[in-house]
Amino acid sequence: MFTRFSDIDRLFGTMDLLRQRLDNLYTDYGRPYGTRWLMDEGFLRANLYQTGDGFEMRLEVPGMEKESLGIKIQGNYLEISGSRDQKLPDGYKVHKTERGNGTFSRSFTLPDDVDGNRVEATLKNGVLYLTLPKSEAAKPRQITIN
Image 1 (cartoon, rainbow, N blue to C red):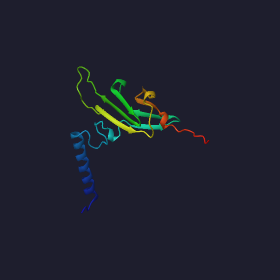
Image 2 (spheres, rainbow, N blue to C red):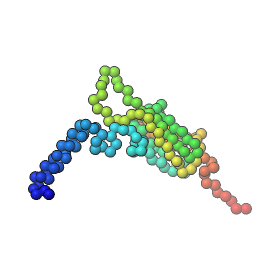
Image 3 (cartoon, one colour):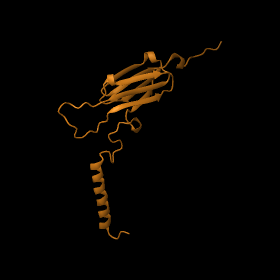
Image 4 (cartoon, one colour):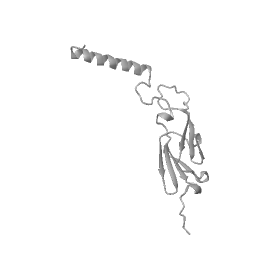
């Protein structure tokens, strides 16, 4: 049992020293996401909005070029995939890297079927904007009574 506050201070000081040494050994220690680029840990964040005749989706894809992104849609199933590869300029060597690279794929099940022929995609300032119009079969219809 601790009898003095100095013993508690020494314990916390030792814990801080251990954390500092682990930080030096493992750069991912203590960070929620580290240097990995995994979709299940919050990357490729998306917002889905319902408009009158369809949906609009906005996805964060910082540093991505449109050529490295792929979009597939079938019915109400949407898949976004891509890859980010960091090319090292000639004469450079890596000192520290925190930006993730590699391939990814993320899929979404939309509330209604989408007309795949009318989907529009725009990439602006690191945000992918998708306009997803509903298919005619998914739109509500007014039925008149005879």
